[in-house]
Length: 237
Image (cartoon, rainbow, N blue to C red; front, side, top):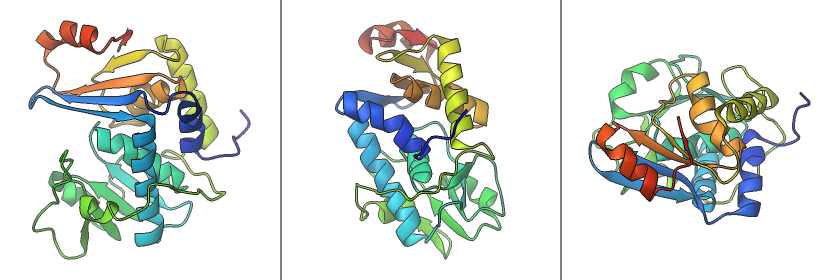
């Protein structure tokens, strides 16, 4: 497959933003708490841009830098991943002491041992910062909010755990076809994003097809039928 002349984020988001920027793109549920957060394509892009600007301007990451994203399947993770790719960095999904930056939840701080820069995400819907962080560790929510919501990517295109942009896109499009996901679909999923395969099948395949994702964590089996109806789900994973 010929490598695209853009970042992974541009390739995934540009068709969505041209066709339907205001429509729901990621709808996230936590059945354990009752939380529901919905992001349009435009809002997803804005948060991705803030992340990319943070990586470039505050952490001084150059294209090709490695970022360990040790985060669960969450609406903030969805934006953070796109921001990393917009900044031209390579995302790894496992602890990596050679990474230039680790993005972690508070309970995974130990997994960032040896990494030069560490930022912690509370994953709180209201942007509540993480208190009492160790010296030198950045609170992501506090740091990211001051950065701009537009980003101009450079020419370098890194991607995911050793895979190029073209390889990731090829895998995502192939996965979408195998799952029967097409533009306009609403895809209900509780797949975690802990491995490359899970991330491709559970998130990137949806974006590559121009569909939208209804991601559920701590799923309640009793809520499935109601959610399929209220969210107009057309594909269940």
